[in-house]
Amino acid sequence: MKYIQVAFIFTAIADYQQDLLINELAEIGFDTFEDTEAGFDAFIQADQFQIEQLDVVLVSLKEELDFSYLIKEVADENWNKEWEKNFEPLIISDQCYVRATFHQPQDKYPYQIIIDPKMAFGTGHHQTTTMMMEYILETDFQQKIVLDMGCGTGILAILAAMKGARDLTAIDYDDVCYESTKENMQLNNCTYIKAICGGKEVIPSERYDVILANINRNILLDQIQTYAEVLRTDGSIYFSGFYEYPDLDMIRDACRDFGINYVSHKKNGDWVAAHFKMS
Image (cartoon, rainbow, N blue to C red; front, side, top):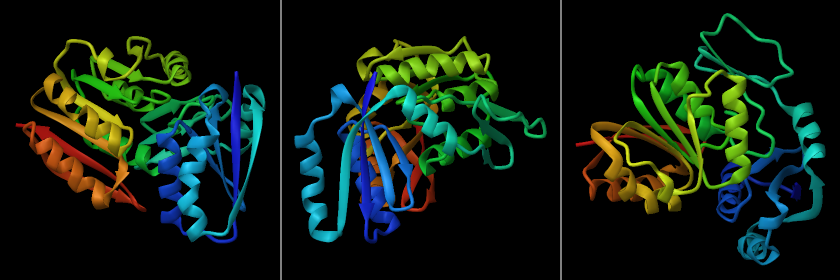
């Protein structure tokens, strides 16, 4: 499979500006991002790349920032070699150790997750994934029925399984994420997680105790009604993939319309994760 790499070079860029740009790129299909000394690289499957969509995203940026970018085609295996060279293990809340297959295990951590993301989003390094994992580590998942929407590599479903969830479904519309989730389930002995490729239309007719949704604001707003239809009374939703302002208020208002009430939120940089409960 071929991928398109867009290498961005900035004279200067603030963290919040980079986060906003990454969020806009994610909305047009870019699913992996790597920091570089001069800016960052963004990756998208070649068959999903449309230069016209990229131009729309960048047109307003040209008025605010001095930058350049280079587009090139990258083979899957070359990207993975580059990723392996830069990937560092991650520790979440001093409880969960996230590593790749080429790192040594660390038995002092109660939860160890092996992730081989290929081109799929979700190694745990992004602030949104980190905050979602923090919420999972703080929550009782024993015997819970769990839905992970926009599962990426499956890392959230895998951690929920390690925390004792008895029934898990992981869904992503991207077939690369779907295949990555299945591979990572094998690596972590969590083959009982049900992986499905698709969007909200493929959610099984089930009642869930917990829904995990780390996607982006627009998709979350579109899917909240569907979540409300499958979430048990007093069930929890953990959302991430958006900013505190104005996104959190928009999601809070949309949830309220369906009897889903705000409980709390975390903030890491400009990103937010939030906990809601069904009344």
